Amino acid sequence: MTEFSTWHDGLRQDMLLGQKRLAVLVDPESAPRGDGWLDLINAIQRSQATDVFVGGSLVGEGKTEPVVRALKDAVPQPVVLFPGAPNQVVQGADALLYLSLISGRNPDLLIGRHVESAPRIVKMGIPTVATGYMLLGDPPLTAAAYISHSLPIPMHKPELAVATAQAGCLLGMQCIFMDAGS
Image (cartoon, rainbow, N blue to C red; front, side):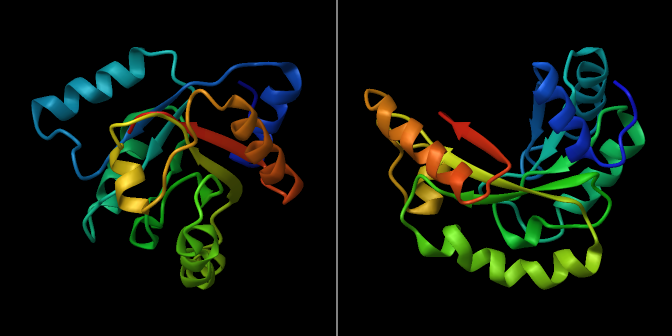
């Protein structure tokens, strides 16, 4: 891939060219240690992944930044924050997917946590990508649905998913991320 000024520029260029991207998601709460960590790094290096996302539904304080630093030192792919909470917004990543749970009706995840984290993000200067996050699926509930107090869009209602994604785009979301099972 050609060097771009920001991760988002590369993402936009790939979209315009019809290029697919594949991200590996590393949850700092359950990231392996020791030999397991080395195995993960080797697998990422050998994979076709274009990006490494870091984040999770329930990550303890202080666990995200060491994982970001270790990944930045070990893999060639951009490391992008995929935060489930404001405490996962840390220094050192290439970009931040600024997630807004547009499929739910929880105001805290539509805007509340953004107000909480925005001053720190602006001060850090990390490039952000406004991202509409959509939960899709049928019972049983996923961890993301449980933590967010949000019901997923039923799989047999694709028209609701399309309308939700369209609404997100009209609101200015630069990306739509659909989650059907975390």
